[in-house]
Image 1 (tube, one colour):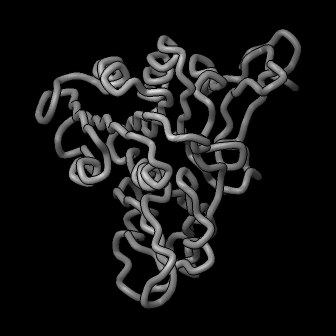
Image 2: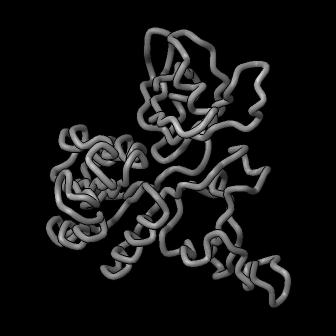
Length: 264
C-alpha cells in the first residue's frame, strides 16, 4: 500500500513505522493501526511516498484494503527508533519472518550505500507467507529461504540455517524483524557467535506515541536495570541481548517500579 506522505517520506529511516487512522471521520475504531515502513520515495508526482505491507486481519485493515487511489488518509509518522547502521563496512545478515520482513528492505538499501556485504535469511510457515524473496535476491549477495512445511527453500526455521550463513560470510552484525519467537531464536544464535544483534519487535501499538502503554516489554538498560520499555517510543528496534524474551507479557519482580516481591 502506497501512501503519499510528504514530510514523512523525507525523514523516515529503516525500522521506523507510521500510524494510520482507520474507518473514516465517523469511525467507531478510535485506535490507529501501526505499520512498519517498507520503502520510501522522497519524490513523486504528488510528493514523497511511503510504502507499507497490508494484510487483512480485522475491521481496521479490512477498511484500509478498500481504499481507492486519491482517498484521504490520516497518517502520523515517522515514529519509533530506527536501526543503527555500522560505522564501517562490515558483513551483515538480515533475518526476516513472513510479512515482518518488510522493514529489512529499506535497511538493505542503506547498508548497501555503506558498502556492507549483505546476506538475507527469509522464512515463513509456508511459501504463500513469504515476503520479498525476489527483491532480496536483487539486493543481497546471498539469500537463504526457509519454510516450516518445506514448500519452498529449506525445510525448517530461519534459526536452523542462520549459523551456516553467519559462518559463510563471516558476519559481524545481525538484524532481524518478525514474530517474537523468531526474534528470540535469532537473538540466541547471535549470542552464541558473540555478535551484536538488533531486533524490530512486533507488539500491538494502540497509540503509537507512548501514551497508552499497551506495547511495553521488559528491557535491560545501560545501567543494568530492567524497565518496561514502550515499543513505539524506545523501540521498535532494540538490542537483542537487552530484551528479556522469557518475561515478555509479564512484569518481572525486579523491574523498576514493580511492587516489591511481586511478579505479574
